[in-house]
Structure formats: structure tokens, C-alpha cells
Amino acid sequence: MKRHLRIFDHAIATLLQSPIKTLVVVSVYSLLVATVVSLVLYVDAHHREAEALLASAPEIVVQRVRGGRHELLPLDRAAVIGEIRGVGRVVPRVWGYSYDPPTRATLTLWGAESVPPETLEIRQGQDLSMDAGGSCVVGQGVADARFLSIGERLPFRCADGELAAPSVVGIFSCESAILTNDLVVLPTVLARRILGVASDLCTDMAVEVLNPDEVDTVVRKLHERWPDVRTVTRRQIIQTYDAVFDWRGGVWILAISGCIAAFGILVWDKATGLSSEEARAIGVLKAIGWKTAEVMELKAAEGIVISAASLLTGLVAAEIHLVVFNGALFAPVIKGWSVLYPPFDVSPELGAYGVLVCIPLVVLPYVAATLLPSWRAAITDPDSAMRS
Image 1 (tube, one colour):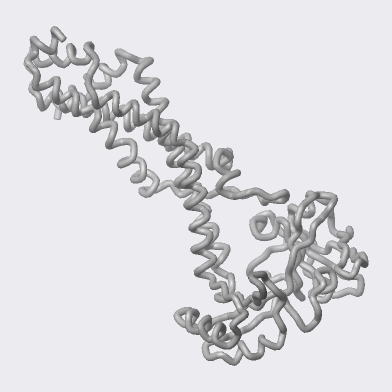
Image 2 (cartoon, one colour; image 1 turned 60 degrees about the vertical axis):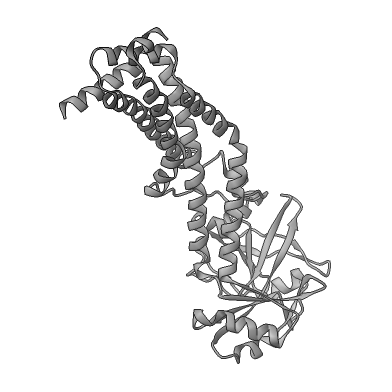
């Protein structure tokens, strides 16, 4: 054990003999590790957030399509859908979008008689009140953009050209901003008036399936009954989010390919051979009695020291980037864009997954590139190595 510790100590001393070179290698190495780990953890955090948010989503959303475009759905279909075996509640929904000229943002309008407390939380004020003038509950982004507080009115131009100005009775909490930042919840009657949805129509229907294993069967029966319907299952939405986040992560990998290429050049330079000074040092070690296995252990120790230092530094830098700066480097690409895009604090979970991604990608290639030329020099005659 003492012999191994002395070899390890000699490896550290060798690296400290060229501090600038070692610092440059560790800096480039750490930058690559931090970038890769940040990207992996950031995308993984969005995957987990999407799954958590969609856990309460309906199993099936039924829409009507005509001419390849989304169209309003007759309300009388709800009773027929409810008669299908395995179907629980069928909830017709009225929602849509309204452009807000002062903020140049598109607001999401949702008609409901009350705010579901199990999904959305009101930070200020109260739930919807069914008064004659109308009321609404708005997201934090809408309140900030329009400088709204409880009791003030939010004007909308209705589909018939008239003006509606519901009073703000509640503001959603910041914790639900990813769902509610641009959301305005209105009484269904008022939402129909603003969006121009007739009383016998709805935007879509949320279908509850009692047995999750029967979702595909219910979907098949819906398509057999109405050829013009389009069904979107919760599983399909989650898969779509996963595909989008993975695709955007791949875009960032292409963007940082220059950094990866620089590291590849560094590894290639290490693998093609040693400098004359390094070869001479190995020749000296062989001449004073070091065995080939001990020389290989020394070089492996040097590679492990640099890899461990770079890995730890990169992991710390990745955590700082994600926790302190909320993944500012990747946010525009991974999250997308919007005028009222919600603030999203990522919750990275650094575990074996993030570390294991880096080991085969950056650690093993560098250590292997260090050992190969060292082995060639170690089996060379010491006199030839010192003369090289």
C-alpha cells in the first residue's frame, strides 16, 4: 500500500511541475464536463416536471377535426361518450386564446365554474364569483404584465365586437406558474361570449377512463363512432414532451460540438505520442529500476487525478449553473419562448446517472489516451528513451 501511495504522490508532483499545462487541461476538461452534465440534468428536470404536471391530466382528450383543422365539438356527444363501457366522467371544456395588444402577448382563456384546487393554487384573492359583471382569476405573468391587483378589471374584446371587463378576484400562485402564467380563468358563460363559442358547442372534452389499460379500447370505439374525432391520450402528450426535450437537447449538443471537438483533439494528441520531455522522464524512471507496470500505474494515476479534479469541478460548475442561474445557458432552447413565459426553477437531481454519463464520454477516453503512449515508452530501452 505504501508503494502505491508513493506512486500516487509522485504522480501529483509530476503534474505540479507543469502547473500552467495542468491548469489548461483541467479547465477545458471541466468545461466539457459542466456543459454535458448541465444539459443532461436540465433535460431530465424538464422530463420530471412534465410528468408531474401531466399526472392530473385527463386520460383522453376528444377533439373534432374538419379539413385537417381543429373545430368545435357538439355538446350532445358527451352523453354518448359516457355510455361507452369503461368511461367515467366526460367533461366538456371551453377554452381558447385571446391576443392582448398592450402586452403583445397571447393569453389562454379557460371557462370554468370554479378553479380546481387539486391542480391550481390561488395565492391572492378568492375563487370565481358568479356576479353579473363577471370575474376572473389570472396567472402571475398576466398580473405582472398588466399591473393588475385584486379588484381591478381586465378588458377583452368579445367575438361579437362588444367589450367585456371581468374583475380580477384571484391571482394564481408562483408555484403553478408553468401552468398558469398566461392563464385567465373565467366563468363558462363569459368565456363563451369572449371566444364566440355557442351554448351547444365546446372546444373539446376531457374523458376519464376508469381502467388505464382500457384507454386504447375506448379510443378505438370513439374513432369507430365518429370518424371526424381526434383523440389525444395522456401517454401521447408525455411522449411528445419527452421527444421535444430530447430533440432540443440534441440541438444543444450540436451547438457545443466545438468544445467536444477540442477535447477530442486533446485526447488524440495524448494518444499519438508523448513529448520528448515525457519520454525522457519515463526513460529515467526505467533506468533507476522502475518496472513497466509501475510506470503504467504512475501514468494511470496522473490521468485519474486530472479526470477526478475535472469531474468534481465540472459537477460543481453544473450545479451552480442550474441552481443559481436556473440553466440560463440552455433555457432559451430547451424551454422555448413566449412573451409571458413563466419563470421555471429547475430541480436538478445529481446522482449516479449524471456521473455515469460523463465517465464513458470523457473520463475513460482521457485515461486510455494517457496509458497507450506511456506503455510504448515504458517498453522501450531506457537509453533510447532518454536520447529521444
